Length: 333
Image (cartoon, rainbow, N blue to C red; front, top):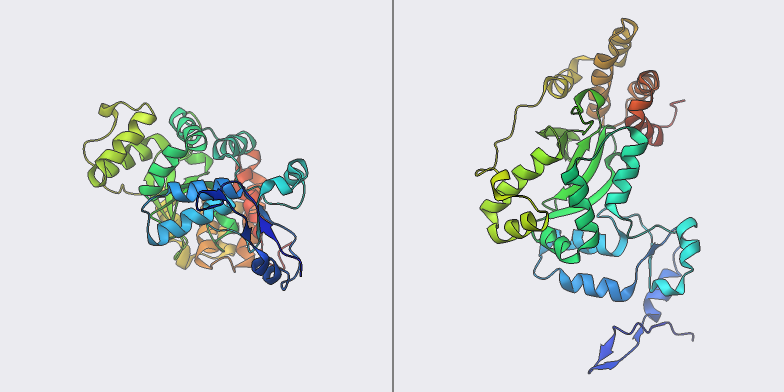
């Protein structure tokens, strides 16, 4: 019988290098249908990063380990291939393998350049430090702030197509996200920040941009875990006086967010298209998003109408358009 061993140098027994027998796992994997994708992870790096987690328990630890193995807290059903040295790295970058450790800073810069929004200097610095500094990532893991730039719409049906996830907050599945809605951008074209609740698909307003959100978050962490909050603040070069003394209370959502949600129960796609014919394009978009979210992504008329609206609105609306196109239900042209 063929045996499969992992001989990574990090595996030791009694202080001496020792191989780990993976035969049982490999034979079990072969019982399943062939996979089109696989996550790539270096076993030594995985072991080191899991050990670096320290005392993180429950859902937070499970989410952190998933991210270490796959680069996401919501992985596809695909195997993790290790060690990476067994795979041609150049082929892995272009072939049917999932890139497990893509830099979040690079990812968000590319999305901003493509979809017409800007990163604040603090957001740039935060993501760059996160990508480069393992100790900084460990601090954030302890604070329950698991950074991952991705589309929420790919994981949660019927979610708002304007949302772009930045981080899981608390390990329960809810996400801190940029809300890529051009009328709400700052003068510097930075999107506001919202919190996405996965059980209801609703969005809660958090702040006008990442800087305002993160300084408030630091204030909250300072009340809960002051030592870690100070380390994070100092690593990012934020002056103590920039952080509010008390964490801000939840703000009243702006009208464009609140009215859309309140109108969902009494609006239909036909009503929204009537507004569109009158030239009320932004109002129609808000109503259609509310209908889409309330239907948990099942209202095909709302989906088709939203696609039409985003195409009319033009390039500045390419982020929600791209999300909706990738998720439209069967039957939508």
